[in-house]
Image 1 (cartoon, rainbow, N blue to C red):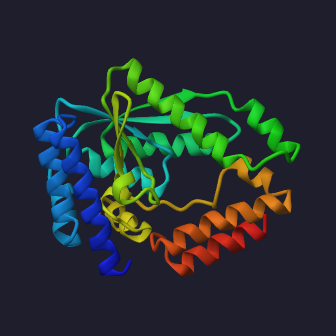
Image 2: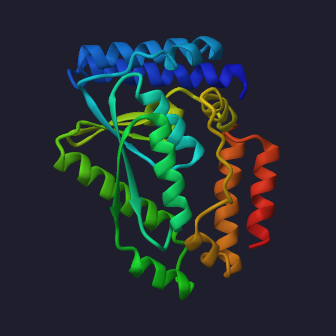
Length: 256
């Protein structure tokens, strides 16, 4: 990512963070820790050293929407420096295979975080996908987010963290009703490769096929491949994914 662009995004993140603090939404201790993360993120080596220190966040809980991918795993690792992390994986056989569940269970043990699986019904989305009525990702993503938010509210948890890389700047830390949502990689303007470096520092390497089983079903219809490729290109244009990885992902979609 170009340094000028990254500086601009980090300034927007800070401005929104300060706005939430000044309005009384953020507690001082949480604001101070998030502010420190922003400052350190300008020097990746210093940032990495800080998040790997033994001291963990205690007391204040945060749900991390945990898919077991690079972005959510890096988000959990960063977040445990500030919060008591509760990883929540929204599960359905339509989007996750048993091997994925086993891998996620191993990952959360490596990270040393609390975790739970929550099953969600995606049968209607699966049926519409099989019939070629729409691309499933938007509806599936919305239902998963609703399930994560519902869990946080039921448990009285105020902070919910996602591994979203595209909701940058002003969209990276927002108040949604009684919940503070932090899109951690976006908030810190991290790239996918930087997230991988964070995981590598604790011995974690994640290799996955692009997309889930339901998305691969959707790609039976050529028009759905187009929508997926547009998503990949948005990540490349935003410079959170490099062009080489973007090309690999596009080629994998075309070969589905």
